[in-house]
Length: 197
Image (cartoon, rainbow, N blue to C red; front, side):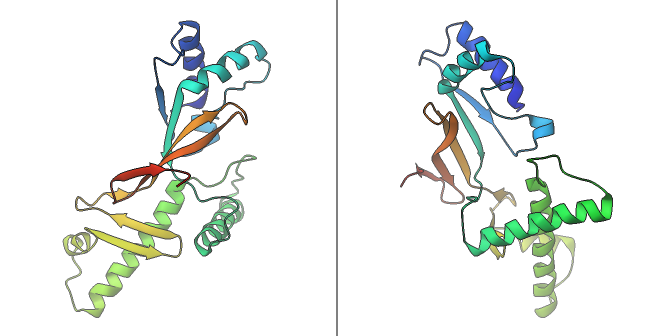
């Protein structure tokens, strides 16, 4: 959902008296590509009057997004992902003469494609090692109800062949004026727990 439109919507809801605690609004943020989805922020340069209205209205807004690895993490998974993002960014420039705008990096589809190729390679190697059939149908069946432990993290595929992702629900912290994760929906466990637990 476009972050700028969400801001405009929340301002309109506030002006209609619909941000007084009786209503809760949800915005799904599938990934951060600033050029196409905009920044999910109450602030807009040069719009000071509406910035205050939006900041108050954002108290009624919850965002749902795939959980991200902490920027401060020293885990091997985060370090691998960080190195891959740097490599994708470098190769975009050197191989395709594409420079990401300031503050942007390759989106999650790039990492998902990288993971998919690694999973496919593993499945082919497993099939070759066990003399199994290398048909597309047999490879697809080999992914069902399975967790793949990759250098970039765990990839969980459910019984329907869908990739399961942790989702974070964030609410607006009026002190820091930022969205903070309040609930994490854990993949494949199908339960929720507080982010601080």
